[in-house]
Length: 428
Image (cartoon, rainbow, N blue to C red; front, side, top):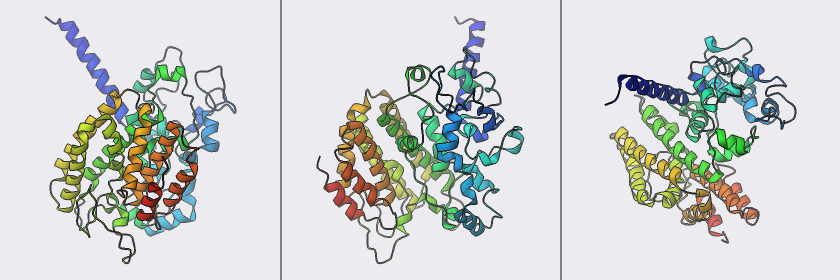
């Protein structure tokens, strides 16, 4: 028989675990903790050292790297550009640099009552925009006895955990239930969003070292695993957007969720052809399903039994959206399959060693002419680039990879037939 004291203890532990999980799921912008400002991290004895230090478990030059090299530092400044002024005018806003809809992604736009004395909105996307409000962990996070989980419990956002990192990045680079680059915003002139977790991680300067100390304290994985899990999380986020934003009670649904180029091309550009993964007739405005495109190579390696189900469920989602049927049912079914796929990726031993197979599959999709829209082509090129690097063949085929990048350089001139020709010219 379980003793009463043990029951209380078990309930307490369960409560603490649930509290931690809830904190991990709350993005820094909406969490309880106050944001004290980038200046609180910038001291030379904290994270503001000009040069990295070897005497510490962290480099201590993180502020300098961010302020000089990281694109997130300039996110707020972009709001003063000519393009931003034009977008704000088109949206009927007084300006971009004070509009909440712009600040939500171009700055650490926490509520005013959660801004400390040294907080400045013009810092852009600063430390706490990703790592969480420092109100409770600032004084203790350097204590020798403080664990990474202790810091998370005190409000630090777990950017090392791939699901949480992807959720945070995608909240701006794709959108979530609280903010989205809507069709109205893009119609006003905002660029279309593009994202792939591992590629965008690599493009930004690293402000940490993936050494033994990091691996002991935090989650880590190779680039191929990060890419695979990032693709799954992008799939989840796309489903959330469809569920929360598709129906808006207006004549047209939220059109940013659809493939832009299904409508935005010359009427004389007769590019339509049947697509196996949609099954839709000519004239259909189809969902932007680029977040699902790279799931097939991944599934064929880690969960081959799920491939047919994945294909059928994506087709079903396209169909119910066009025919205005029960979208939520299809979203839930596809979400369950993504759960299985994510678990399979996590259990799969050494996915990095399957880079050659994954690469061959992505190229085979391109050779077959199945990459018909620009956004899927972007995802394919980014996947090929990172998988080439994983196999050690990038330099050998650099000219061919450069051709692929040139093919997706301009979405207005993208030609799916030329793209398929480049794929077919691969010599491996």
